[in-house]
Length: 410
Image (cartoon, rainbow, N blue to C red; front, side):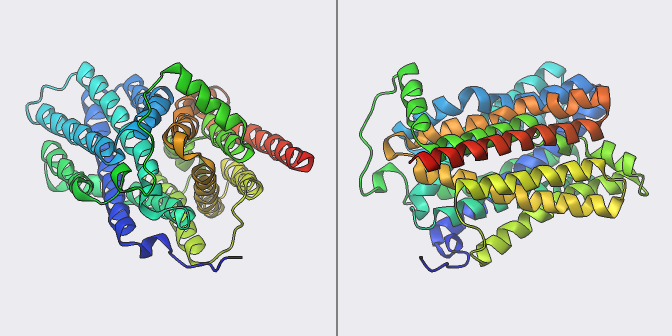
């Protein structure tokens, strides 16, 4: 058994820079959401536009993750990430101009929200490929977990920073400042010594063959139990729950009836993110969990139970504790499933396999607004979230049983 080195990836100087760049990008991403959503709500008071904002954020991952994976197999992922950063900066710039000139219209919002979603595909998929280039196989699990923690750090600090910035300056100026926060990652990638040219065994220059590549990638995934089971687990988690429960936090804060719903809402969101950040710290400090599909299934099952308990809880302190546990478990099984996909992806299809994983783990969130949100409008958000968590728990149990049966046959 290899000796566990705490914070192994963060000891790598290249990954430290990548970690900082991803954290600042996630900060800017969340700040942009807060500022743009607030202005859109004040100007248009459109619930439909709010729904479109969620769909346009995740639908590009569903439609474009596999093609983007194919591009990362052929082109330098550093340049693809930089394209994503330029798109992010361009969107922030256009928001700022439209806010400053008071010329914002709904069709502007729809286009900018969609471009922002596409930018995320360039950033996320290519970053996962570059991650392997930076740290290699030995530190990959640590890198995936630390990278996920940096995203939660941005999610935790982004809304508060964006709100504070709007109090300090006008929304237009806040967007211009936000645009600059994307620069650190963009600039570092310009000369970062990673990517295809720096690999010991550079990939063959393969042509992109459209659907033939897609089918070949799916055959690769289907033939590997770890790949297939983790992609199915991530897809089911995103389909049934995803991040849709976070959008319902104002409703849960009201149902829990603890003081000011605005404060309660912020505390609930912070509890979820704080649990994830603690998971990143604790799991990086100690070798507590075995890297295996069965461990990921167990953590996902506990996540379902935590969220179901939160949904049905009538106690505000208990709800905070259960959300904290849910955040801890979500980062734990999410980073583990991603690491298993990375470790089992063949080099010649690495980008494409990661694209399939991105389509499942992020793209399927497009539909979680239906399972938690729309159904919640009919039966209530408490029951819709607990029902979704129950259905996901059944799916996790079935996938875990299938995996154990397949292992026995070998």
